[in-house]
Length: 117
Image (tube, rainbow, N blue to C red; front, side, top):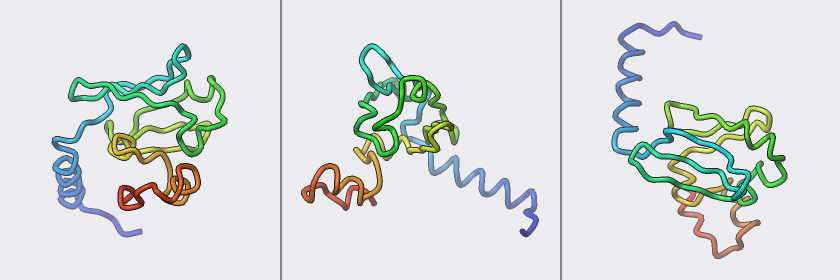
């Protein structure tokens, strides 16, 4: 693997910050056992929630496994270590709860595959 210079690392970090600017990111996340929902508090002040039964890899998860959700990528993603499952926050907000194949199989051919891109 090639060594990166400080300038290359700084440029990559700047590019990442520019990419994320203006996008709602996760500020906090939790599994609410009462409502059985994954609840994401976003940096723009809004909240997004979804049932884990919709999401690929979370369908059969136990409450204990769902409790293990962590924010990753500076708020860009969610990660469940015990389940080896990751989602992007922008993807979830756009209604992408799995791969295009999963979405078609789960929600039917009418699901808009263009939304997955």
